[in-house]
Length: 139
Image (cartoon, rainbow, N blue to C red):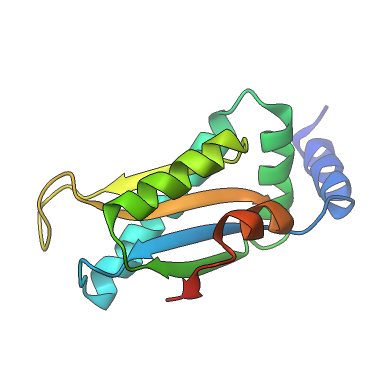
């Protein structure tokens, strides 16, 4: 199959899938600057994309393609409880079969190396993402 035909197939198939999105959950207890927060969210989005792309799960691949073709919708949310909240959400996502990636800072600027800053969840169906993070507030 040519690259064009594969792309056309992926676009056509994604049109019949439910809406998808990616959630980015930021720790507000760290008091990161706006720029630092934006960079950490970008890291989380890239990590989730890579994890979904490398997945051997066909459903995960289809959700990624749908999400990508439909404009890569994202939502940025906050947790105030800290590290434990991110770990709990990550565990719940993985139990549900949803991609989850935790960003740990390199420690070169504002935070200590290894500090968990942002959790990416998805891409997955809006329904599945909302079940996991619907109780959180927008950043």
